[in-house]
Length: 286
Image 1 (cartoon, one colour):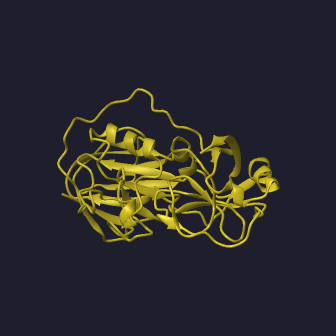
Image 2 (cartoon, one colour):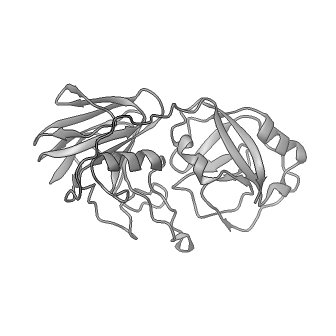
Image 3 (tube, helix red, strand yellow):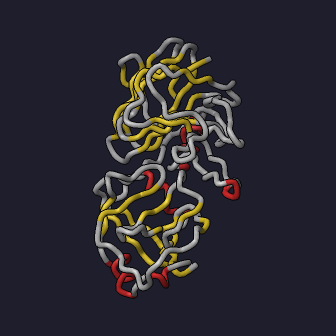
């Protein structure tokens, strides 16, 4: 059974829970940016959380299935249509063979997740089917005409009376643990990071949330030897504007990391549209 891509929107990729544990090989974790939404879509069609879904970005996508299958769309709310007729969002929907599923543009947030019963059965790389934009691992970003295999369903679709749909962050409030290189910045810069307003830059992507706002001043010159970086690391490149590293982030870098955003706060980052105000709140030190 296959799903054929008719329209890939702005960016649609295959994502699962990623490939953690390979940083020593220079391989990022990758995986769905909004993992709660990915897990919800899978639950609604009876899949385990490890099944691969489609992650759309802003503009949705359109696919055609060659056999009957149950599908669910979660994450950023959007219009869902089957052969031109409105269908439910965040609920299991039965597609007949040959049906066209259209996932519309996000009405709030950025990323929607499309789960098919059985999951996307693309060939795994290092234990994951996720597209890694930085390393080029996993399936390439989808394009019209691509055909993706589906696995066998493993469980019944789950019903839901109410599905939580968190509003997109406005502003995006991010806790930050200072360190390990906050001493590379002036005390004024630490105050600027947590006291000044930033906005999500339109150059943000799956690698990092880039921010527009006041630059941070260093207290020392020079560069660091490359160091490993964790998910949520807030690195400050030479232009002084912080970048919060996301699932496809590099594994090493030579610019100082002023702090780390805990992983629990990162799903909201996945749904922060360009222009969203961002404020950092200090919660301690690593």
